[in-house]
Length: 393
Image (tube, rainbow, N blue to C red; front, side):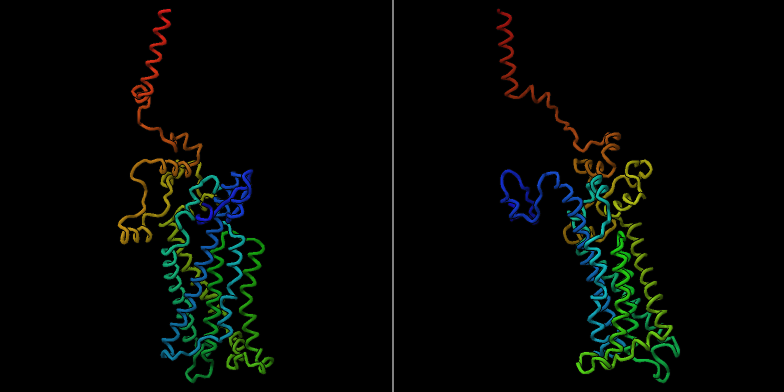
């Protein structure tokens, strides 16, 4: 049974350790199962989903920027970035995702224990699914458009300080490519910082190192040809490009301020629209955890008393309606699951005050059924005989 399950959990006890040896996770007591699921399981799922979607996101941005450049170079296949700089893209952006995977906590364990409905994140695949990948792809295309064409317009209109001059005496494609690349890395750093749920010392150190690494590597690649020219692995065409670019004010304006700021504004707009109009149970859980919503006093927030799994205006339900003919919406009738969901959202004490019990009593009259059943009739007959015998005595 453990081997057939998606994830097997074994409990070590008097029966031996056979189940533990064949399980993915081992615990000593049943009471450890709740934190294993609600705390560690939920956090690991959300961390892994965030890293996977971000990895796809940043590589889509990089690929589409190359696609846009090909439209400017007549689809000649000209290289836009220096080979070694291009190969270091994922390395430059790898520290903050590592920090997510180890330290990221979106909701405290106390809040998750108080509202077990937050476990729906993994149960309903709310973070890693086709819908979120589609959203991330569209957002990545929008970011790539901003990064490439904003840099292109600024360098094109930059006069003698831009990438092109009337006589072609200022710069070349390597300078423009480096500006797009560094601006892209800084924009993706901003994206990574926006996704951090809680900051600690290690996350701050990783963020600083992630900003410094591309500049350090580009400087090495621009000067390293003189030192390693005999090895033949450095590109002569890239020699001195970083020094020329760093000496231009327009380079710092675009890569350090303009592009990251516009991309950050675009991403914050997307996040704000999502939180305002399409929140899910995890977003509400983070609000409760940060004190923005008092779950124990629902009369202060009557419109947020019942928290659905997803907004009713979401692409996920639209896909279900189109391809499967149904959508997952709020229950039409009061069921045990709906009452339990409201109880989890409001809190046990407040639910009891409102008369909401997650184990509703049946409307079936068991007293009538007990009097009309075969065994109850037999018992009644025995009682009548005993009473008659007592009267005779």
